Amino acid sequence: MSSLTAIGFDADDTLWQNETFYRLTEERFTSLLAEHGEAQDISRRLLDAERRNLRIYGFGIKGFTLSMIETAIEVTDGKVSSLVIQQILAAGREMLSHPIETLPYVRETLEQLSGQYRLILITKGDLFDQERKLAQSGLGDLFDAVEIVSDKNAATYERIFSRYGDGPGCSMMVGNSLKSDVVPAIRAGSWGVYVPHDLTWALEHDEEPVGEPRFRRLGHLGELVDLVARL
Image 1 (cartoon, rainbow, N blue to C red):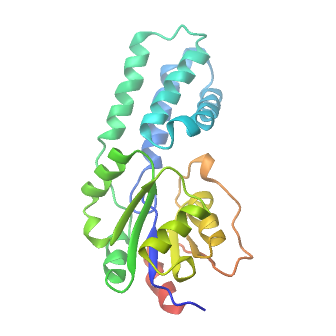
Image 2: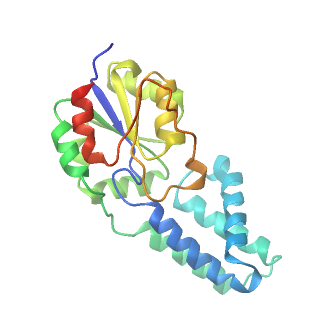
Image 3: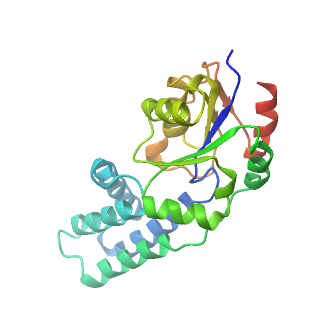
């Protein structure tokens, strides 16, 4: 079996909090439109809009904000007030300036692995926002490379691990999303390590590939160093 030389890390909800702020903003959004429907129904329609708009706006806060505006227009039959639109835009701006909260065990885990393996940050979303979060996290110096991509699939991991490592077979991807981090990395021939987060966006859900020999699930990121040592 090829020896491990490179480890990729997801960013949002793997290294720092992210989905929490989306959920809080969504609650704020549904309360703005409370007179036009139940919160659960408005949230469902917002998710439908996000799904439709992914191929146009991509992942991230800006696309989320535009999807909120689109949903507000739909649920009010085009009668949404300019004040509500302003409040939605303000909520999006607040998300783009929210302080970064790193998750437990992140820094110590990266520090222990840095220098032994090539560490690569592989994240998707808005370029400016992801660069901001990385800079504020103070973790940038621990990575040998940073890739901010439009989407994550097997071809993405094949390209990145071949460019910065010794190919997918000698690489590992660590993240909280089965759909984006784990399953496509395994398809590319890499190890896929699943570190669940309490909150995960509905569009990132997938089945755990429990039968795959290169799949591992951890309780938290602090268990990664021991896992790597055992491989």
